[in-house]
Length: 111
Image (tube, rainbow, N blue to C red):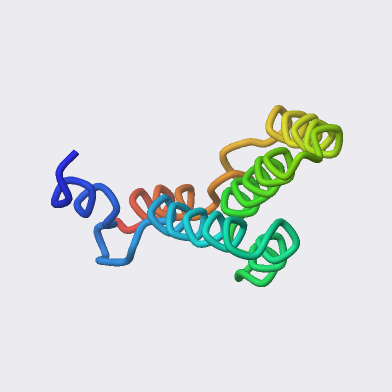
């Protein structure tokens, strides 16, 4: 994809950066922290990020599990993956991305 296309995909109608772009930036920063300072520093970085919506939290926990696995703590990472899998099976759109439902509701209540 071209840079222009990526920017278009990342932009929401109101001009704010879409969460997917933010997750990508946070992931890159966490991976850079992991590469330079190790697992503990990367996990601390992820922990200090704003809470965000449940989708952001889920992605951060998944990234933390990946970094844990890459650090050689495979059993611990497997436990985290299993927990995230179970959580994912139970989540609904309202849990996953509440802002999407709010936008949809505004569309039909605006009249």
